[in-house]
Image (tube, rainbow, N blue to C red; front, top):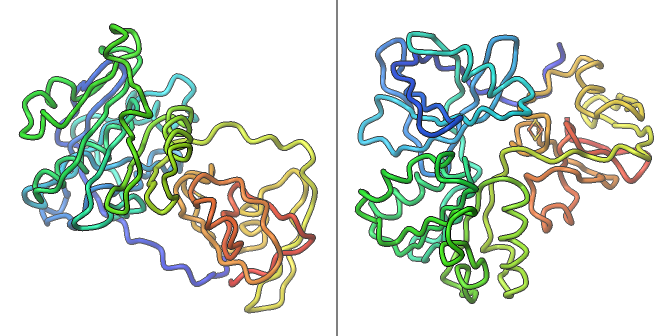
Length: 327
Ligand code: FES
């Protein structure tokens, strides 16, 4: 395979030392290093790639800030429409099994050391948000947290939140509960301020609802931070072929109408790192030097899309006949 100059993370081997049922359909995993060594430190908002049997790679947020670097904790929702990742993990991986993971990476970090924060979690989106609340509380920073779900039985950590030191800063909103317990997004978000940041994680519909309400209230994009777990279906009607020119070699690779740019690069021998293949994780981000990408990812912000200086070849295409990429 041709090396495209992207530094791949080294793998860590971890053992599942505990598997617990956190809520209906949600399994919690405690991952401890096999070699007995400590694990790399991480900050709130970080995730790891978990390499699963069959070559699947999935991202899971770390939900527990460690007091020492002895284990990582992830929570996995067994999606009814799983593409194989969550079902494989929940159904087949248990205590004693060994997994390969990446070191933690953080695309969803807290901003502004003195800023106040408003945190929104929808369903399994609680995992990075819980970690953020722990970090903010530990650092003595101002925040509010709103945790939303359809039904209590499918919401992890609700009981635990009532025992946390920051419990008075948490509101739980449940769709099938009394109307007064349901989320009023606009009042929870509040007016924008230069010293206030909003963080949201959860299903795409929930996130779009929060982000749209914030935009309507006048929030600046730079103060809105998000992490998607999965993208909705992409409409491929009207997809047409285009070319990718490789800057380092001048080689031109044709992307067929029914092929992703990532797979065209892989077929041409480039060792492109891929993970979610849905435009949510950022693993495949590639610099664009000329040409206009047709952005279809959920990873970059709209301002980053407008800059057109990078794209996600796993899902995005081109509006121009050719993209020159920095590979
Ligand atoms: S592989 Fe996740 S964004 Fe492309």
